[in-house]
Image (cartoon, rainbow, N blue to C red; front, side, top):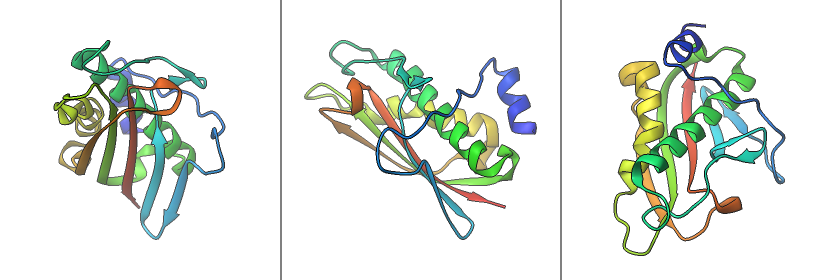
Length: 152
């Protein structure tokens, strides 16, 4: 419960986990790895941020959206593991950014999620990473975050 205590001290809360929006599961465990399906910045299945980064959304707002998507990653991990303290390290983070043509700051946007993981787990929260730009994401979301974590 140390990780959840840190979240509380940061003034953050884990959103409730809703049902998947399609034919998939939120997590899949393979040995000591847990693969987390893409998470968008929603609460109770309602998108909290919508837009195109570099067009009608600035980087700072997109970082907040990425942080919320990261919190949703943690919510489904907690549902899988029962306790976020069972996460040993973040192995990989993949972030998609719905962005305007010519936008090149995808890594800055995805830092919103990566910084959250680092703040909670220190160096163990720093993963290999890819940040990719795209023209569309589900429901007009500005970001989608996937993760692979090592667990006890």
